[in-house]
Length: 350
Image (cartoon, rainbow, N blue to C red; front, side, top):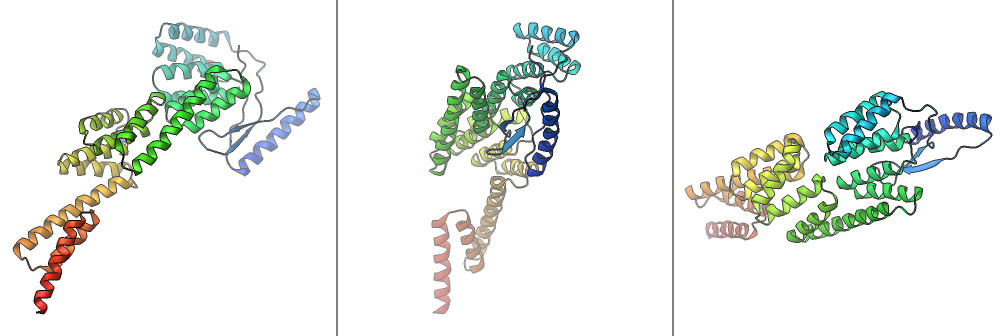
């Protein structure tokens, strides 16, 4: 049986760390007085915060074993897990946790079940709780790393796999997963460079490879979908965005991609609706803001065009349209309007 540990919660600030250290000093003093031994200290990287050190006392194994009822629930969960009935396995592991909430293995088992159900974010929470209770729980660290990697956080995943290797330097699964995390990081870097170069086919290729290791990463899927749209592969882009929206209807990036596809397919009004919806979900969404601004610029261009049709000497309309052309990077059209203004003014001067 894996014993449950009483792990302190991690704090990121110096003040929080100071409070925890003071508490641990009292625990250490009590331990020295009773056993004559100095308890050790373990340091781990804070979850989700690159480079931040998180201090925690080592696992203190509970002397009280889990109840027979909790163990019975766990065994029933194991039986359903073996039958691949993951929903029932989840239910029984939850009952075991409710009965005995300080047992690391129960959280670990439920994390494994949630992973099989594709619920990686929930699984991550359980895996993290399992290693809070028992920092020496190798499978807990492995599952935490796998969840991070599946969600696209390769840096956090790497730290988890490195922790496994600290506990078991011959662990071949951790060695392989660490390589997988490095591969994902490399594809991310290549994709970033290629996106700047507007080599969208290469970005799609990199994201496809990264998604083999990070199947639940919305960020990778959105980047792939955006590049598919920019390549004119609108049905594929729409499909990726729609899959994300089925799981998360408030995902602003997916809403933006839907709008982008409609925009390029000349369904302007529908596209604007998606851009506006994306801004409601995320008011600081830069690309959606730009798309709405482009729509307004296009409307201004149309207004100016109608104005010069009525009066081809209307200088302000030409100047306004030229500026809109500049803002939308239609430089040749802008030059023509500026030349028109110059010729008109020159004729007036003569």
